[in-house]
Image (cartoon, rainbow, N blue to C red; front, side, top):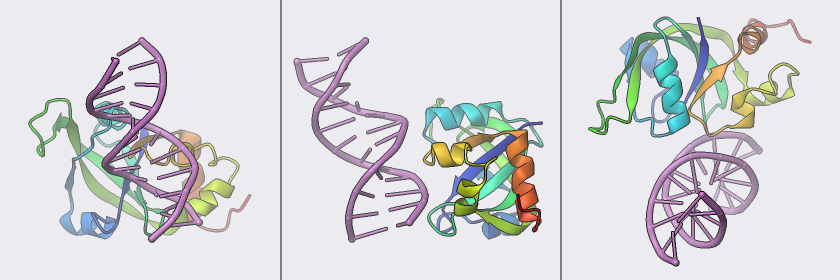
Length: 139
DNA sequence: GCCAACGTTGGC
DNA sequence: GCCAACGTTGGC
């Protein structure tokens, strides 16, 4: 299983909205690197849900419920989307400042290339974020 | 609201 | 195929 991170501005589509709708088509991606990641996603892959602009924190874990298909918002077959459904909300959101300050996490794509909207997350990074979100295991 | 970083476009 | 110009993103 692979780990990912997707970004969304809460004013456009928030975690709460995903929870409420129970599933969403992750479309509108118009960046080749992000697109390639979407294509690589497998069913049940785990996806961190990051709020950009407002909050700037990882708030929850989504799951890939349907692998890549033609993006319904365009006729251009270059672009794909996947279907995501909400998994668990983090016990405590993990903020960007915290990520930047953490030894394990400061190499995350989120820090290195903050503009990429669909990113890969390593297993070590995944586990570390979960540690931080569950509280007190500070380094 | 500002600005740096990045991706894309288009002229040559 | 290079590179300057431009638009967009996102942190602050």
